[in-house]
Length: 418
Ligand SMILES: *Cc1c(COP(=O)(O)O)cnc(C)c1O
Image (cartoon, rainbow, N blue to C red; front, side):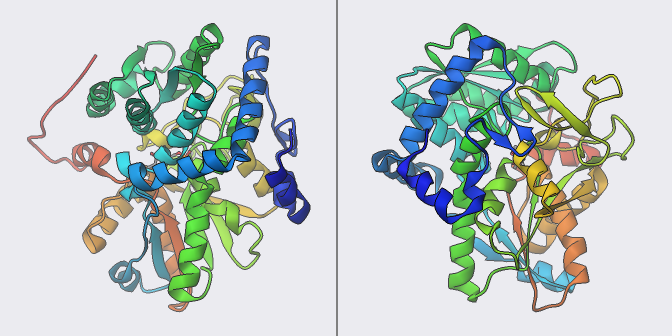
């Protein structure tokens, strides 16, 4: 269904012709789900298109983004860091300052508001590190919605404090014991729940992934990041940056940051994947290094899989980047040579985590640290009058303990929840 708003956008701008009305980004995306989910996805798509065109929905969302989440976030010139690196000027888009600590709240708020509009009183979600679970639990508390979070048992062990926070906000956290006990299994379990309770329940998917309309909808809820960034650069510096850099797990913070710059040909766009311990099979999550075309959890995209089509195990020091598939829109714009992709290793990310903390007093999430590591290398190759902007997708408080453990700090407190 086309709304007046996106019809207008379609006529103006080829960016809005993708995805098509089947959710396809060229050969990627689409909707590969069991038949029982076809109707709920169609219902969701129609509800979303209607909400998108409804000024009262947008006004309510904007009010909540401001008053509950803390938007707009600052655009910050990291001068000491830029001087230290000695190349391009580095700017940071401070999504880490948002309520619950990362960009994820933009999407969680949008989808919860949509669920309310659809009359759904029960919310389910998956979470890896816990950031999406916390954002979802928090908005559910805010709206008085019942909330159940699926989380791999291994991730629950690694992120015990986040489990506690979700429970404090009233969410039921369900540990998933199958397979590698991480994000992929948590998504499977959430989809199973959705199939069973679809009349009462909305599934708040946490990244620009899955079946149509999720990649489109999640992107739209995060577009505010790039829209603000563009305006802030015009107001602050009178020019646009030379390059935008963001880390890419499923790809939600990156596509939200990049989207309003896609038609600015002078601005280079770069996504950074998790290079893990090495680029050997099973030791990383860099889908464009060693992945191939396949279908996972509802959508067609680049996936880390073996020659029999079995999904490979993945590894990253940051749980939020540790996933075998990349959002379909990224695959599309990579083919079009509009978004470039690189990777950073666990070690480089940890180094960047320490550098930003030491130079600017800002602790970045380990996910974000991948984008920073790549940006530091790029900045060193550029001149002082050039500008790089990194999307600081989240804060590093959740990772401080894990970083301390890796750095060999002694006497750390222990915490674990079942
Ligand atoms: C979840 C998360 C990511 C990765 O998810 P995307 O959908 O790729 O943005 C990156 N950074 C932070 C801080 C996160 O919490």
